[in-house]
Each structure stands twice: as structure tokens, then as C-alpha cells.
Image (cartoon, rainbow, N blue to C red; front, side, top):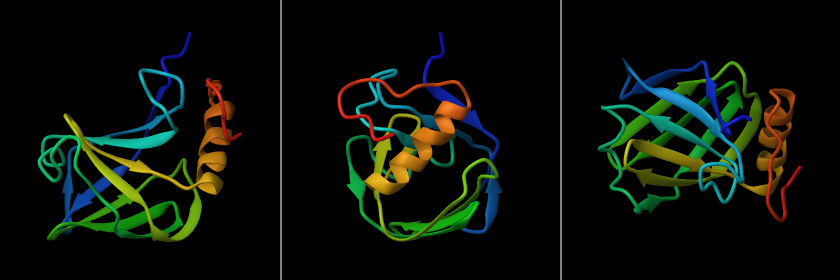
Length: 129
């Protein structure tokens, strides 16, 4: 049975410097995920936002590349497996090992479709796919 946290190949940059980080597509219904989202975990990432704190920055996602500010820092990620075209505000929350990106319904549908293609079916009431 899948655990609902799908590892993604990704490059993560903090203020222009490539940093060691793990990126996951965390699917609704697995490991306490109430909604499908993207986790970014790493030593250089985990101090950007305190757990249970959040920001709502302007996010520019073009194809497989996304950039957004967190406080005085800038994050840039290249995620070949996820192609979105989005320019607007997203919820970015802090967690123990890093941050997570919360999405709008349209993007959640696309992410859950990617999860299904990888063999992970969203579960729970109101799955968006």
C-alpha cells in the first residue's frame, strides 16, 4: 500500500544557491494530509517558517519551475514531474522539517491526477480529482 508521500525529483534554490532538499507530492488522506500539497524538506529550508506559521506570497509557476518569496528569502524550484501554469498567491506553511505549499482547487485536481498516474489514489471526503 502506498504511503501517499510521493518523492519528486527536484532542484531547490535558496537565494540563488542550490540547497539539499527533498520534495514530495503529499496526497490527501495519507499521513494526516487533509489536502493534497507539496512538501519541501531540508536543513536550509526548515528554518524559513516556524511550524504552524504561514505566509501567502505571490507565486509564479511556469511549466516545471516555481519561484516565490518567504520573508526576506527567495525560493526557486525546478520539478520536472509537475507542470503547472499559475501566477497568484498560494498558502505556504511551516512544518517541522521544512515548508509545504497549499494550492487552489484547479491545481489540486492537476496534482491529484499526477498522483493517480503514479498509483496513489486520493482518499477521504471531497477529493478534488
